[in-house]
Image 1: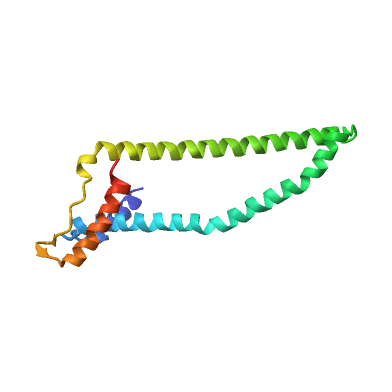
Image 2: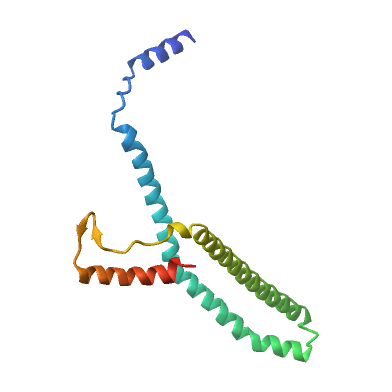
Length: 166
């Protein structure tokens, strides 16, 4: 036991002391953390974007399969085939679950969009005193030509009237 403690003490004493942190580490370390998290977020978003075509293809295949099975389901329901009654009822239950799931997801998505737009509009209305864009006469104290100022003010007017004014 004593040999193990002596060995551990020797190994820890032999370990090199950590270098003193750089004065720039105060700025660089948080910036690197933000950069790393930004790269992680972009990687996640790019994965979602790249998955869109496959998701659309999967939805199209599901929709086609659903529609191709519909004539047989309608025939089985209308004929009331007792041999396949259980399978027909199972298909009807699957169809109703699919339709109700689609309706629920669309409803929830529309509610979320409505909540976001309502929140954005409330924030805009609350801060409307700060949302007046200045007219362009000079940039950093340097007078700009009248033609450029008129063009910038025309764009400013459209942005002000269509986006910022309630």
